[in-house]
Image 1 (cartoon, rainbow, N blue to C red):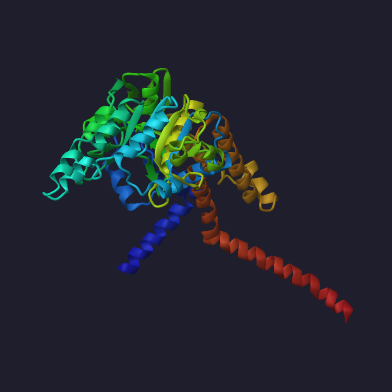
Image 2: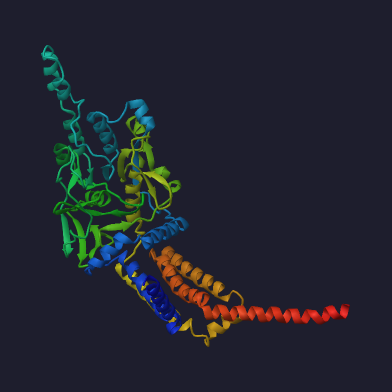
Length: 497
């Protein structure tokens, strides 16, 4: 019975391969791969069939991985060249810690650094750190740990201002924005809410489209109340690489801003962050007259500049505290304050393959917004790619098996014509996508087009190679050619004798 079933399947496959000169198999491959490719970037305004979720669990996202690598190649070929210099980074680096002591610092020392920066009149100061726990070096905390016999010393310490109070005063007196980190899990120092600027939604509510979290690591309520803004520091990681950054996130049942857009809100004095959305998701995020186009989930594709081009924006916190930095480095600038010391900073890999501090990514987003140089992959582009693949694939399915066509005659006449033609077409495709990236900022997925169309063409080549009739004809032709050569050589040998 098993042999009969195997024979039946073999007969069916042989018939299917021969039927329509291989067109049915090629058509099935075209439709199946196009659907899988579409699944990897399914439009948010169209209900996703449950069957596709099961396919995602079974099949690897090869299209998504190839797409990411291609987009990285675009950036490495054409990295962003900064046109403006709106950001200065004050780095708590190794030199600073060597001179002023290990991290975490007492909050009064951090307040002194904030005051030193604010004295140079920056537009905004974003703290790329969060402080969810009380400072244990504060005078009141030290007094609590003294023995009962040290009553007089404890009373004197409690009379001193708390370190949180000193830092809160510094934050209140400066255009400060505190950072926070959204997380999925509960911990001792997480909370379910934080103070943040209102989000004014124009159109459909995008809360279910954006990345949504239940908990947040934020600073103490006293510090939040003193700062002029709160913002998320989260970045999107794809296989360990940062390519996209959320401008807005969901925290519980509300929307909260990312650090770059919140700093711009504080700079412009806007009361709220504007979010423009429709049924497909977020279209743009902005403040005042600045609008940033986004993906439907509120992310933006970041066009990275090389660290070689941005290294000048860093100044050491030690030099700031010692008054050794030119005031023009801060005047009318957006200042980011954070850790870059070895072992303390959160290092991230960019699309350029560079390992950079997390604070550098925040700076690059702000710089990109100032330059107005955005990368875009709108929803319509995915549909345009799909239509192109289907149209070109159907053309191949109809035209390739036609042995009387000019293309078939050209392939028979010119050696290796099919390979040369395939290489030329793919080079033209890649060059076109690179030009669109270079001059329009469009991220066109050439890899999926190449994979799908190559698979369609491969169906016809494999059918020709596997067809027993074709193999027999080619073998007979080789035998006739060999016999003809032998017949020509025999008279020549007789003459020599």
